[in-house]
Image 1 (cartoon, rainbow over the protein chains, first blue to last red):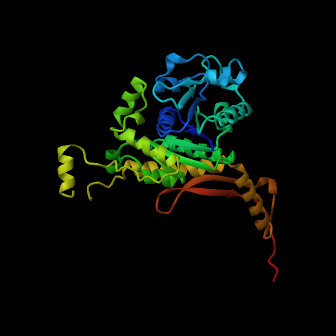
Image 2: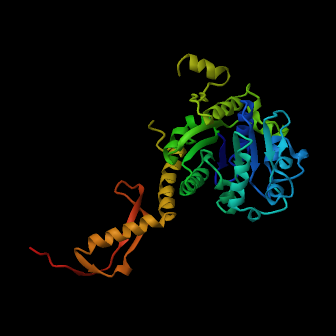
Image 3: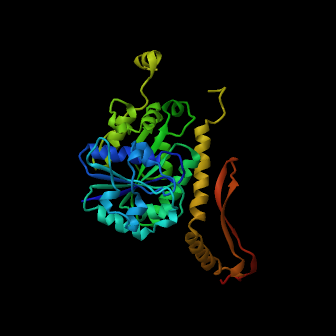
Length: 263
Length: 87
């Protein structure tokens, strides 16, 4: 059975595209057949994060308008034979697609794929409506900041109004040190306010920037903390119960010494 | 503890957010306000006469006795006449 998952947030710049790329790659690493759709028409980005920007021939609009066949539009991932990308068009705007066309496309893709992951544009206009039209479930991405959480709450309301009831939360850019000194809302605070079930916690980590620089999603690098966290998140998406990594590990010599002494 | 009475910025953020979301959720869902308006109309009309079109209902905020800002439902109902109690 295949599932359409939309990755959305309301606010821009909180990590939707990074989440889409890593969840898609992580699920494909588990042997699932995955297609990533960049629904941010006009502002193509998922191709760059995936490192596939040089391979694009056709795009989402070409497929929807029938300028090419679906499998001609799909770009195969560099490493994973189960993973494909359908890139966004750059020269058109979000009104070039309708929710019905997205539903029709996803219906066709369901035959060939286990997971169809849709990277939603920021905002709540036409692009958002297109991106959520075919979704069975949603991942709402936020950061522990007032503006991002406010927008996430609005998005959750709109998803519910569109009868998407399976909505789970990804909290990005968590800084355990700031949480500890009371200058950042904790995961519990965010979950309490938004009242939806958590699926992933991402620490703020420079390795994420480095992986975007090179166009290789960090989930492939399980040596890193975010790599592990994304892999765990993928398992949770597939229905497993995986405990969350304790991000509050002491760092450095003095941190370790302090934790040994119990302070 | 005695030298740090200023609330942590995370508590400020959380309190502000709670208030913002109460406003947002109410304003984005005009249905609830309208249903509440009708119910209030029904109840109050048992006791007093007033112009139905004058009833104003809104979600705002107010300062509580302890000095905190809290969300508040404000109803503005100009009364025409109070019905005589029937004993």
